[in-house]
Length: 282
Ligand code: AHM
Ligand code: MG
Image 1 (cartoon, protein in one colour):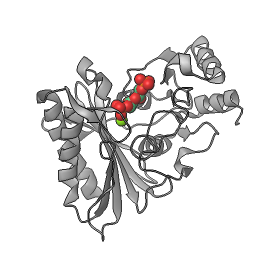
Image 2 (tube, helix red, strand yellow):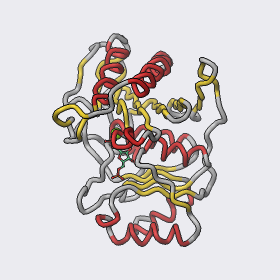
Image 3 (cartoon, helix red, strand yellow):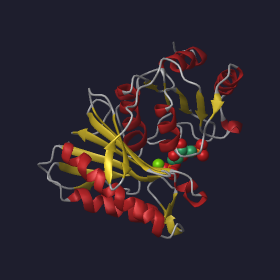
Image 4 (tube, helix red, strand yellow):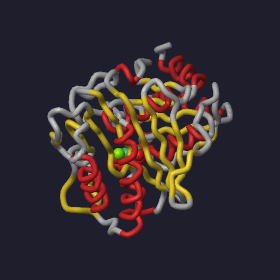
């Protein structure tokens, strides 16, 4: 798996160059889940495909930007699932965006997730990696190299609150819960990019990120394989929790379709406890 993390470090620098230099307009058509694709989404996807398809450890690639699973080396141990450039809708506003990687040992599911990583392309590049059973490692790219940076560790309780989806489409219990958090002093921090939004909660020591089921998206918006499960592993490894609306750990999810979605909640223990009570799943 170390070789995969090393390749992520290299490919992240190439993605950064694409973000800086490439056209941010749309291509004709949509991706596998019906989202409009940026030329940048497609270019980042191809870069990652090129970087990993020759790695004999990788048996298959599953990308947010590809409809089909791409088979690679039949002897390979790992299925690599990735969102090449998360935050397509905010890249034109020049906000921070990210890439997310999940490394599955065999057929992808919460149980087989062996490692994960994400890269934040903000004013600086940061990388967080995790191997199951170990603490997350954080790096910042400075002076031409990835330098180990302050470790990520969640406190029991945080101060930040980020909930996705349109309020018009939230369930009443979600609305009441979120209002309750604000009334008790939580601050809103939501950019519309899950990588920088979750990274902020992780580096500031806690809080809650929600993407609930909504009346327009009953399964939520975020994709299990390459958005939800990798962050679930990282939150648990950082001393937090990641659950679905029934209060089940996201890492217990089985996966029925490469582009399946699920409602999801990532946070420190206190906020997850409050959420379970509000949703009646404590
Ligand atoms: P994308 O993969 O098309 O960029 O969509 C995923 C993004 C997440 O980064 C973010 O958390 C979410 O969509 C925001 O959605 P919303 O605007 O509905 O809150
Ligand atoms: Mg995405």
